[in-house]
Length: 136
Image (cartoon, rainbow, N blue to C red; front, side, top):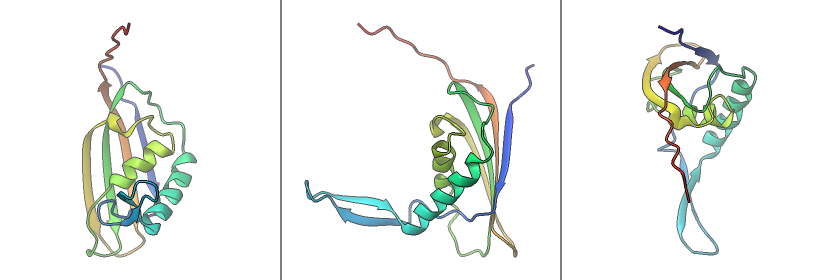
Protein backbone atom coordinates (compact mmCIF):
# COMPACT_ATOMS: atom_id res chain seq x y z
CA UNK A 1 0.00 0.00 0.00
CA UNK A 2 1.34 3.44 -0.89
CA UNK A 3 1.95 6.18 1.63
CA UNK A 4 -0.74 8.86 1.76
CA UNK A 5 0.27 12.44 1.12
CA UNK A 6 -0.94 14.74 3.91
CA UNK A 7 -0.86 18.50 4.36
CA UNK A 8 -1.89 20.37 7.56
CA UNK A 9 -2.14 23.93 8.80
CA UNK A 10 -3.76 25.87 11.63
CA UNK A 11 -5.10 29.33 10.84
CA UNK A 12 -5.71 31.96 13.54
CA UNK A 13 -9.02 32.93 11.93
CA UNK A 14 -12.75 32.42 12.33
CA UNK A 15 -14.58 31.58 9.08
CA UNK A 16 -17.52 33.58 7.89
CA UNK A 17 -20.63 31.90 6.57
CA UNK A 18 -20.88 31.84 2.79
CA UNK A 19 -24.62 31.26 2.75
CA UNK A 20 -25.65 34.03 5.14
CA UNK A 21 -23.16 36.69 4.23
CA UNK A 22 -24.13 37.88 0.79
CA UNK A 23 -24.96 41.37 -0.38
CA UNK A 24 -27.58 41.98 -3.06
CA UNK A 25 -26.66 44.02 -6.12
CA UNK A 26 -28.24 44.70 -9.49
CA UNK A 27 -26.31 44.42 -12.74
CA UNK A 28 -26.52 47.85 -14.36
CA UNK A 29 -26.39 46.47 -17.88
CA UNK A 30 -28.90 43.61 -17.57
CA UNK A 31 -30.93 44.71 -14.55
CA UNK A 32 -30.64 41.22 -13.05
CA UNK A 33 -29.95 40.84 -9.33
CA UNK A 34 -26.86 39.00 -8.10
CA UNK A 35 -25.33 38.20 -4.76
CA UNK A 36 -21.75 39.08 -3.76
CA UNK A 37 -19.73 38.14 -0.69
CA UNK A 38 -20.04 40.37 2.35
CA UNK A 39 -17.17 42.57 3.48
CA UNK A 40 -16.51 40.16 6.37
CA UNK A 41 -16.36 37.21 3.95
CA UNK A 42 -13.99 39.12 1.64
CA UNK A 43 -11.76 40.00 4.59
CA UNK A 44 -11.71 36.36 5.72
CA UNK A 45 -10.81 35.21 2.19
CA UNK A 46 -7.96 37.72 1.93
CA UNK A 47 -6.52 36.76 5.32
CA UNK A 48 -6.95 33.00 4.82
CA UNK A 49 -5.31 33.08 1.39
CA UNK A 50 -2.38 35.05 2.84
CA UNK A 51 -1.83 32.44 5.57
CA UNK A 52 -2.31 29.48 3.22
CA UNK A 53 0.11 30.80 0.59
CA UNK A 54 2.84 30.92 3.23
CA UNK A 55 2.62 27.10 3.52
CA UNK A 56 2.65 26.12 -0.14
CA UNK A 57 3.31 23.90 -1.94
CA UNK A 58 1.00 21.09 -0.96
CA UNK A 59 1.94 17.61 -2.19
CA UNK A 60 -1.08 17.23 -4.47
CA UNK A 61 -1.71 17.50 -8.18
CA UNK A 62 -4.88 18.07 -10.18
CA UNK A 63 -5.71 14.35 -10.46
CA UNK A 64 -5.68 13.62 -6.72
CA UNK A 65 -8.84 12.93 -4.75
CA UNK A 66 -8.65 14.61 -1.34
CA UNK A 67 -10.20 14.14 2.10
CA UNK A 68 -10.55 17.37 4.07
CA UNK A 69 -10.70 17.31 7.87
CA UNK A 70 -11.57 20.74 9.23
CA UNK A 71 -12.00 21.70 12.87
CA UNK A 72 -13.20 25.22 13.64
CA UNK A 73 -12.94 26.75 17.09
CA UNK A 74 -15.54 29.49 17.32
CA UNK A 75 -15.37 32.18 20.01
CA UNK A 76 -19.01 31.44 20.91
CA UNK A 77 -21.84 29.11 19.93
CA UNK A 78 -23.86 31.75 18.09
CA UNK A 79 -22.36 31.13 14.64
CA UNK A 80 -23.48 28.68 11.98
CA UNK A 81 -20.96 25.98 11.14
CA UNK A 82 -20.01 26.74 7.53
CA UNK A 83 -16.61 26.01 6.00
CA UNK A 84 -17.37 26.59 2.31
CA UNK A 85 -15.22 29.74 2.30
CA UNK A 86 -12.34 27.66 3.71
CA UNK A 87 -12.56 25.37 0.65
CA UNK A 88 -12.67 28.42 -1.63
CA UNK A 89 -9.57 29.87 0.10
CA UNK A 90 -7.70 26.55 -0.30
CA UNK A 91 -8.28 26.75 -4.04
CA UNK A 92 -7.56 30.48 -4.35
CA UNK A 93 -4.28 30.09 -2.46
CA UNK A 94 -3.17 27.37 -4.88
CA UNK A 95 -3.09 24.55 -2.33
CA UNK A 96 -5.41 22.58 -4.62
CA UNK A 97 -5.98 23.40 -8.29
CA UNK A 98 -9.72 22.86 -7.80
CA UNK A 99 -11.75 22.49 -4.60
CA UNK A 100 -13.89 19.90 -6.42
CA UNK A 101 -11.01 17.50 -5.82
CA UNK A 102 -12.23 17.29 -2.22
CA UNK A 103 -14.30 14.10 -2.30
CA UNK A 104 -14.66 13.54 1.44
CA UNK A 105 -15.45 16.37 3.85
CA UNK A 106 -15.28 16.00 7.61
CA UNK A 107 -15.93 18.96 9.84
CA UNK A 108 -16.40 19.73 13.49
CA UNK A 109 -17.15 22.92 15.37
CA UNK A 110 -15.78 23.58 18.82
CA UNK A 111 -17.23 26.24 21.06
CA UNK A 112 -14.43 27.10 23.43
CA UNK A 113 -13.06 30.13 25.07
CA UNK A 114 -9.89 31.49 23.58
CA UNK A 115 -8.83 32.59 20.16
CA UNK A 116 -10.71 31.32 17.10
CA UNK A 117 -8.82 28.74 15.04
CA UNK A 118 -9.25 26.66 11.91
CA UNK A 119 -7.35 23.37 11.71
CA UNK A 120 -7.13 21.99 8.18
CA UNK A 121 -5.80 18.58 7.24
CA UNK A 122 -5.85 17.45 3.61
CA UNK A 123 -5.10 13.83 2.75
CA UNK A 124 -4.79 12.17 -0.64
CA UNK A 125 -7.27 9.28 -0.83
CA UNK A 126 -6.85 8.29 -4.46
CA UNK A 127 -6.61 9.48 -8.02
CA UNK A 128 -9.42 10.87 -10.10
CA UNK A 129 -10.21 8.74 -13.12
CA UNK A 130 -8.75 10.55 -16.11
CA UNK A 131 -11.33 10.87 -18.85
CA UNK A 132 -9.61 12.08 -21.95
CA UNK A 133 -11.87 11.85 -24.94
CA UNK A 134 -10.64 12.72 -28.36
CA UNK A 135 -12.45 15.71 -29.77
CA UNK A 136 -12.73 16.08 -33.40
